Length: 341
Image 1: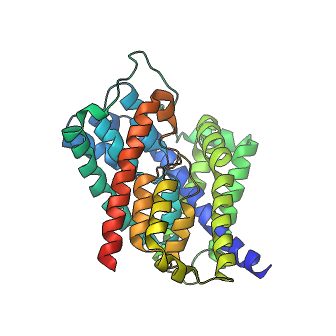
Image 2: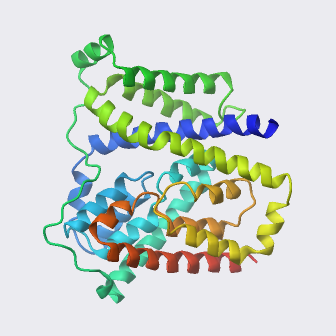
């Protein structure tokens, strides 16, 4: 029971921060619709830079957007490969919550690797891109026009408040109370805790001011119902499992004695188009147990939910992309592990 109660506050803090960051990404995605899509129509390094940059944005929206544009012939296969190397899906939010400085450095490293692999794929393996149906259409997250701040509408929304809005306001208020009371977050007031407080206040502003359509379609249906419980369960499960294992074996010594086996397992698990399994490696790294090379390999191969829509576009493209990223991830991870030894 002690392990359970020690793990729960940490999991709640991480899940709360992830939820807030998802809300902010959804909000910014809607408010900035258009400019980045136009940039993706360029070719060469500009397309790679924007596609990889979208992949580096935490969550699935950037990856889904590039898949959609690839399905309609707007971006190259190399740009798609680079996007999926750069993306870590929902796990990117968790890494920002657990080790923000190193997470940003990791994102920068993934950006560089993704750009290089995108160029190499288009330059030396032009036939890797499978043919796509001319009339293909698909459903992904689109950022439709949405006016998110109209004073008179806000007053009316708050007077006739809906259950989703009331629940979100309540959840964000509880998160802020936990930070201010010291129940959640770092024990001292540092830049991490200040950042969490500022993000929580902005999320509270978003939940209070956005129209019902945005709140129900983007925040309620997409973020809360589809992601929140899953993130909490995976985060709590990974933390709890590692605590249990640590009570019986020296996990760090075992990993150090089987580093290439763990590297292979981490790379292969990255083939699963699902957010969650990667969190075990994130947690181990956060606790200083896992070499950074294995985390990098896992991050390169895995892409959260990013490639799920690609299965609807072309299973052949999905398989080829995953094989390229598996080779890149294992190679980069192996070099980093050997360099560190």
